[in-house]
Amino acid sequence: MTVSFEEYAALARQLAEQRRAGEQHAATESARRRDLHAAVDYLQQRLTAQGHRLDQLGRSIRVDQPPAGSAPGSPAEAAGWPGPPSGSGAASGSGFGAGPVTAAGSGLPSAAGSGPSTAPGTGDGGSDGAAGVPGRAGVGAYPELPAGEARLALPTAVSPAGVGVPAQRAAAVDPAVELELARRMADEADRHGQQAELLAQRPALLPTWSPLARAVAVYAGSGAAAGMLVLALVLASGVGLVDGFTLGAWICAGLPAVAFFGGYLVLGRWGRPAMVTGTPPRYLPLGFLICFLLVPMAYCAYLLLVRGLR
Image (tube, rainbow, N blue to C red):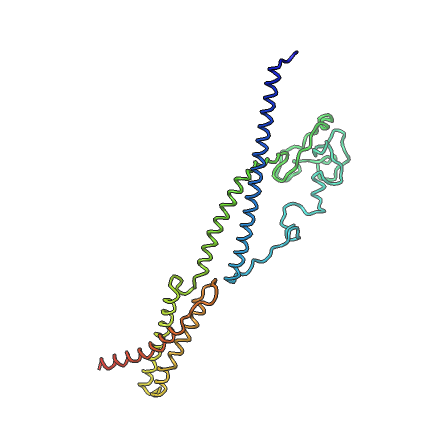
């Protein structure tokens, strides 16, 4: 059979096209692999940065690290695995022990026979099989196969789920899809991390208020509480329990100082965010002015009210 020059040229062109297609496919696959490796490296760096940021956030809000679990391969972990312990008789009974295996490992008795069994049976030296199991009345023993069929019997895999059932083949995983899912999860983790940082930058006391408004409210509340104590002292002075000098000292200096330091401590305890850079302002001059003006004003208001009622 002779090949003409045109057929030879067509075959050469076909081979050249196949070679170019193969080279293009190899170049495309190589570029795809490079992109996947770059995406994996970027995602790893991003997850590492997220881990460091979460550690800093946990230290800032004083969250302890979770207790470390048991190491892999420890006795506590090995005790949780199903199956009989090593050294028990279940291993030898499953065909993997040191005893002889009959019928090519199928577990069926061969026609050549064997020695008398020590298991409870019918009394003739043979095992009852399923008939010996309690609650299985009317079930006969396993039938014996001829010698030829016993030699041709193939061993089957023994698994806890079933006998002779082949394991399902794992589905093919697309790396690009898995990387996209991991990227979305990283974006979700970033979003939750930003929300946690915003919450950590708010104090427990009046979190939606500005620092100035919070300080004014706290000092005013302390002054109002001190004003109630002023009223109590005035009533005690009216019945003769407190003299005039003691009443004036508490009104002018004692109760305003107590109100001021009370507001200062409240702002330091509940007005400080869990995650903040530096020391938050407590507005000491403003607090001093509010407390030392509000308490005497409460006493003056009480005097005006009493005179107006008379």
